[in-house]
Image 1 (cartoon, rainbow, N blue to C red):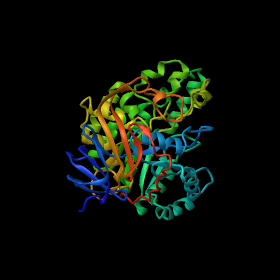
Image 2 (image 1 turned 120 degrees about the vertical axis):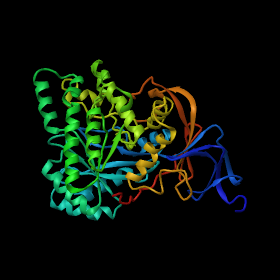
Image 3 (image 1 turned 180 degrees about the vertical axis):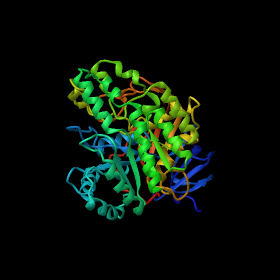
Length: 460
């Protein structure tokens, strides 16, 4: 090919894909990777010597500007996508949540309005089903034409988000016909409701009792039911935010029996433990999320499962609330908005705690943060790898830079990070979205760039 026909060439970086790492130059044209090799020339050339060249991170579990527990998550699509980009994530799939009485198309329209011309990175939507009747099940088919290939179902949050089991069976039957993947929040809502009421009535109102009410057994029992339903309908399921070794054991047992289960965990469950609930209210409330943090034995079990492929995806469940919002539950832990930030720190935490500490390889890191999310969200083969014909979503990553995570260095629209003070090795240097610069030398430069809505393909 003649000289200067490419828009950009990135030279001398170590390309890290999910299957192999190798040195090659990357040639980009019209937002796509068009060739890997050497001796390319372009109008612009970047020397990536000493850096890893990663596919853009894909976070398929976020909650931006979501109404929840009498308030809203504090990051909208503009602030949340900027923070994501700064952390090396170039695509998010957010949850468009159905409100009671609304159609699914109404929910999807609301989320399109939230994101349109505001999201700095590419985006798609799962649909969160919370009010299910025959009309909703009929409507599902039409929404596949809108690029929706996944739905979210809650087995917890009684009298709010929960899908009763009889409805769950109806939805599974519909999803089987439509080849739509179900993503399940697995906790036993009845156990949580009973224990929560009993604890509060007995005067146990501090954040630590959120963890007591949301026991690991609640997660394991709910996963077991979901897996049984999956087996009955021969329908793959995706377990979101797995937190416990108990839940992992149930997944392993059903997997051995041939049940098709895909599993996601989050950085908080790989790094933070439940001793943090012993702090004073405001500090402990930072870690109130569902499911809650677990013990260190669960942390190690989850890392081992990630290394052997039993856990497929690391997403964030990014759902931030300001501390003043957390104070809604100062006298009753059941009123603390459940959720925490994390959209900006995922890649560096998993690299530092995983790759640098020898728990996973750098290729496994890319697999769980880029390739598998792309495949399970219906974004492959345009996303998830550094390869010809893929979108030029690229992260130039310094594997050796040491720094300390501090809220003052982050861009999430919230007044804390649960990872404050953690020393990490590895840093995002530059980020490109479809060949356009979002981040240069650690600074955000993508102010005029907006992401595309992604119509996702079926994955089952």
